[in-house]
Length: 617
Image 1: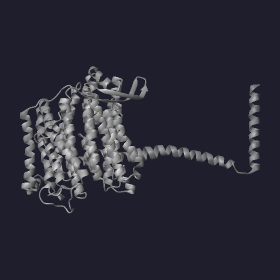
Image 2 (image 1 turned 45 degrees about the vertical axis):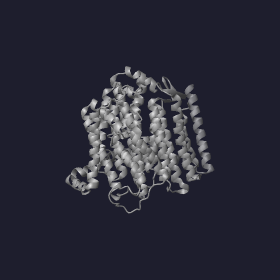
Image 3 (image 1 turned 180 degrees about the vertical axis):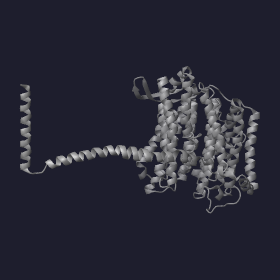
Image 4 (image 1 turned 30 degrees about the vertical axis):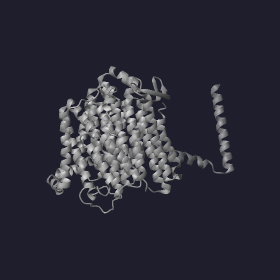
């Protein structure tokens, strides 16, 4: 089947544009970049159709990567039913984002369009690493893709490297993810020590025979990695700042690639988690806490991309709830539908920003539904889907998770539906502020070109009808728990909370716009707390960043580096210089002096020889 072609095609696009892009026209750069991803999508589809039912995994071994003692790790790729879902999401949504980026980045300038070709080269590299992660047949190759998407996120979030806020955001994403990746790497070491292999098939086959304590430790360490990559408490802080990159990057990170990796990894490791109930419980607790916490922050944000960023953190929490409750297929189902409507929300917000020449503040928008109708109607489809409006894609997947949560712990269900209500409120708050009322900005809005709004149309169709792609049925033979049964009462409660959130947003931002300000003034302390995101960044800065930086400067730099290491090096240099100074005095250039030294040396040697011979006798 030549699975390696799927990730290699975007990698080829990266090398072609990275090496020769400076000499290419913008149209040629975009053709190479988009063409490589579309071809990867086509080849993935061909592989899936050729493999058919996929009741068991199809694996390809290419070469032995590491061989040392009992360690035998191959460069292997595999496809099973979970891989199929991820391949379609990554290559399908990734292709639409690449097409959209042609229009969004059209005005990117620089020497010989340097920013343009560099951007598309990075996007292709991002796709390569994510596809490597998805196709990997062992934990180590998955970790290569895992680290690769982290590198690409750093490059793309900090794409505008001449702006300090962008470089700071890139650094923040990179550093926070290293914390999670350290936990993941420890999990890989433990897996190797206990199972003598990193191959999924071998590890998962042996997992039922391992001790619960061992599996719980491995599961919790894997969760640490997932919290970093998928922006869960307490490592979520990098994701909202990732908005510093161009909007297509935001869509790619939030919808199709990086943040889904943690959910995918946990679902992939289900044979470990089903025998480690405490680790699964931790996943569910972190998921529901993150979903609720991030939703409260989204209520008060005014940057249109920040609103959707916090909604991503919250929706990822839902996915973790599904996985933690044992409803693995429901978590992956929501991963797929979320890719549809979240990509649309971000690309739509990019279209709004494009129409307003860079404006992102919702308070400077308004009345745009008649000025950019394609953007409005498509984004409305996404807003309905994320709110769980009946029969949209989000309705099916979100309710599957909430029903599973009710069976696991009823309080999680109720906290989940309250979160759903808040989600509907803040998403439609953004919609009403941007598209209703009177225009409050200074720019002259204009609709995006077809290359930007046509991908929005495709995503709108998927946001509305994607829920009818019954992923839980497809994954029924892969995961042990099967499909979550429907419960009309619980679904009705969830829908009621979602519709209530929409109605409240309409009341406060369309019918009575002054009501929002009055309410904020009445709970000024709470509003300030939520508006400032609970001051989590400031707390982290005071409790972690400053002590680490200060300690590094005082101890590592001034004491260890400058005092000890530099002292040793400088001491060796001083000693050498002193010895050299003594020896230098012997090199006077005076022949009579040299003759004297030779004579002295000869006398010394002869005297030593005679003394030695006398001692022998």
